[in-house]
Length: 580
Picture 1: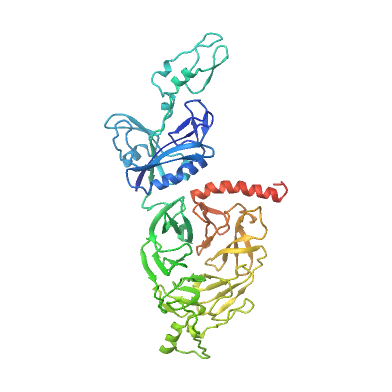
Picture 2 (picture 1 turned 90 degrees about the horizontal axis):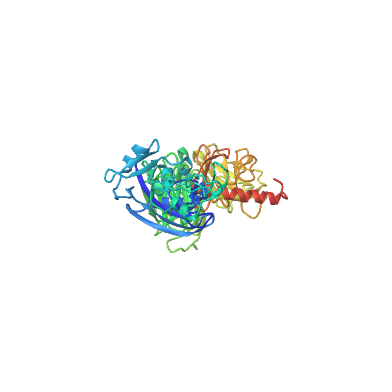
């Protein structure tokens, strides 16, 4: 158990009188002490206003805080102080141990008595909806209690006023500006001075959210600079690569938003790819704009190695300006790029060998192969970055050097068809996929073509990304030819080995036809077929079952999905002429 205490103090505008309205408790409506009218503060408002700040507070130095002011639709102006501070007595300032408070208020609402001054503070478990605001919150400390709201002014209950009609005493409890006479049923408006005595001016005060991070490294950030890539992991966990506060980070998160581990400040760019090898539990980061490859332990986050080939060693992996990469199930990486020397000179003529019979390559031939430049081809490297033959049982000089055609895919090709995706499949297979998903070629580890699948992909306008499951099915995230409104609504499709294409999630799916976001950039699947998707940030991050139903969504995704659902419904109405 790792407890962290977050402090929160804020106010919004009253929806009725526009006066400052302190929010001194986790509630979905707050009554204004000035006008007596309740202002709704629903769960989405808390997520929009508070989630990002409290997640930021988990990363602040202990006993520090900061502030935020602004305007927001639905709340008007707001003022907020938040930070990473231990709970304390408002009267004498004594600090309290969150563990002690959790023992008292962890099961039932209660009060904690300060041992130093005797004052009391409220304790309770957060309401169920609050978990979508701050994941893993386990205790709320110092909220305004109902008794405090009823008796804000000592002695206020002794105030008496009388009915103008019959002279009888009127019941006053400060809960309503209008009271009814119990004898003549006449309504009476409580005067301003009496109402102010019954409901003194309320002020924001600090209260505390205790979260239990367990053994986690922190919470998944809500606001990031840029999302880069993802990799699906066992148990519906997910590996993520992103940029935050000017540095690149890699981490492992679960469906509740907990970061099991995170490594910050890695050398990377916005165009890196992240791949997972289940057998070795290894994460590969292969960049495009930086000449670097990283390997991490997917379980613990320990860096295994980083490979930087700045001097262009022909025997070492090079990834800069690659056209495509794939990390295979045998922990080898295939890189498709134009191979040049350290000076970028790619004008030298390629060296080509053709062997009609099985042949053991000579040292001279190997040296010539390593130094040939100016050639677009795939090359394979082991987990230490050392070059090995592209296809098992053959040498790279014995490859089919012509650019393959989807009409006739050769064995042991040196490169894929033009603009094809490369993706690793089960049992060491390598998939080459047409950008429109109209053709899929499968190769075994020896380079033998296992056939070309030709799906009926008429509904596919453009494939954004793809992944291969353990049964060989290809999952694609794509843009549909039939547009709904002006947005690019993403869909997920599954292509079986028989070539059948089924839309399983997204607005065009026959069953799970809810929005999965617009412009989903990356897809990854586990060997069992669990699907992980992400768009441009963590507000579009989700996991789906193989049939397209939802497993989990990040807190930010839940909020954004509500807005997108309304937008999608409106776009569908326009397309159907107003019919549902």
